[in-house]
Length: 347
Image (tube, rainbow, N blue to C red; front, side, top):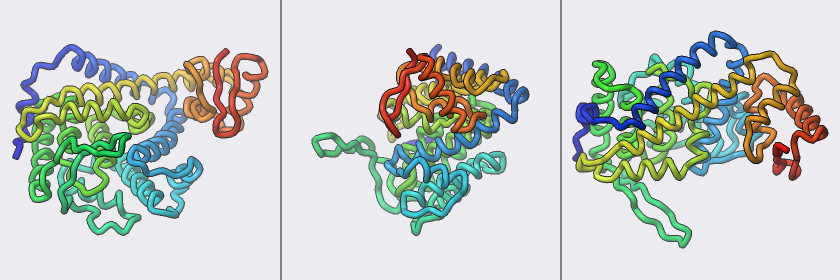
């Protein structure tokens, strides 16, 4: 059984790319703090959008989907789920809300992770919710010709509780003693968590919830305003490639977590930069038309009404639709398609 030792990780010489990513994230986090003091009311509107996107995207990665309307009803109105997919979506919504509201009261221990997993499945009749796996699981890939291939075999069920305890203990040790930069410790923890694959089901979703929790506990709040899960879902292949490269040699303690560290830090930095772009749209009081015009100028290629609405959280749906219509009429935008397939292009 592999030994977990963050103290080995902390002696690693980090390359200039990782050091640059860490420095850039700290810079953006400092700017975000200033922005929040300047326009807290407008930016608060980003929170609900991010919750909806995070809940939708993290479940979609696992093939758990429903309509846009139902996602909004489940997250915003906390309506009763109608089927198994919606039950799992509602569970993710509940855990995410707890993390948003009480992150500083959720220590990183196996017991708390099991409690969060139990809440994730609270709307389903899942007898193993809140318990580590009771059967061996595998990380595999399915190919277009129909065959599947096992890429990685996690620890056996009997090894799992001790492994989960150990990564929590190691993480708390290096963070508590300030022995390792948190932005390095967080991806290492998530990487180890995914390699342990401690649950029969829900490992990917739990890893994304834990990423948000760890970032919040270390003062990085970008996930509250910009969905990290949506960024991961948009580039799923990069996520799986980085994880696969970092898992090689994991059981023997010869793995290289650097690909996954770089991937996760890059995702966090991209989210911070998205936040800065959205702040620019609420920073100055503008008409709905000018706000939508500026948002459209920031888009390259095709974009949808929903893309613009996310960039302009202070505007109602009807205001966004009216502004897009005027920009099409004036020739500043070109519209293609109908209904849900409607896309816009800058001319």
